[in-house]
Image 1 (tube, helix red, strand yellow):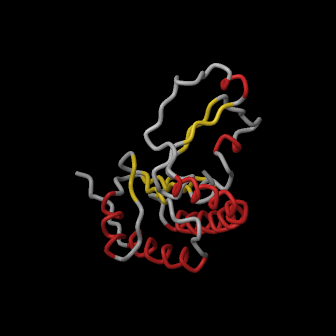
Image 2 (cartoon, rainbow, N blue to C red; image 1 turned 180 degrees about the vertical axis):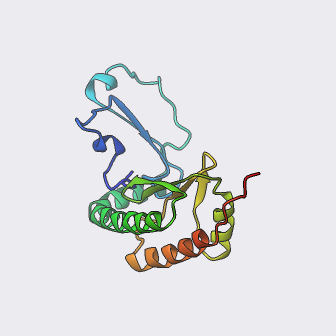
Image 3 (spheres, rainbow, N blue to C red; image 1 turned 90 degrees about the vertical axis):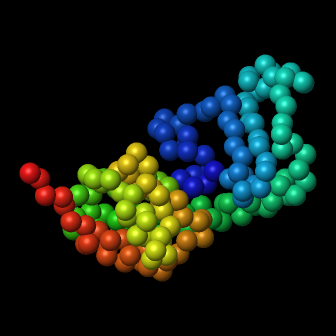
Length: 174
């Protein structure tokens, strides 16, 4: 919710997809225990009282946090898009310098960098230098920074990534 620079990722699809049912949890309540099922009218007519239960229903604190988050998300979306594009542009600059970077992709602050080799070592070395990210599918570095990330913080992270990428030594083939 909001991470891609839109309220919901389905808004990025053209023509826009209108889901019948959507679920969300942690993002809506900023990590507190809250789950939500949203439906259009057609789907809501199928779900009758007693057909759906909840583990986290009725949590007053989580609900209050969710309402506050919704109030500020509109203000955050432009920053998420601006800083996300700034981050991807910096990663594309690194890609131009390192031919082992196959792809830079993402929307908002959901960013992936695909490598032509495993990325686990970058994650471990990045953590040692104060930059937190992970690796999925063995070769994709995934960045999911906080919504309040600034360009200055992006620059700090890109500096570390630049050092890590420059240190890469391609394995010798036999």
